[in-house]
Length: 138
Image 1 (tube, helix red, strand yellow):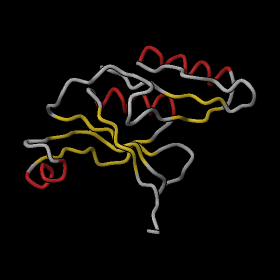
Image 2: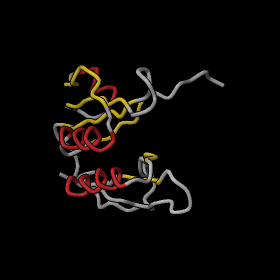
Image 3: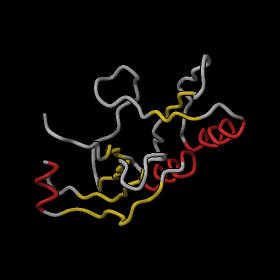
């Protein structure tokens, strides 16, 4: 077995700044400099996408320390249209954050809804509630 440590999850967004703002405001993720602006032959070779360019950032996940994993949020210069969301589509499903059951949390999650978030489920039996976000389509 390879000795490994989880590093990051990459999310591709139509508007990386909007999605990053969502994670920062709602869940307290923290921007990890520098802002990414990638392209060129090496990046093209790594992605397998001719002419690929990307902008974005890494956000440190809450509660996991300075060396914890990040969300890598990218926006490609060009790409295919996003297919309709479906919970049972093979591939990436969701990201879940465990949050305490409280009026403050409910208010904070409520502010996420206009930004494109969606409450998927809440564990009523025992806190913390499981909250998952819908990726904003903006």
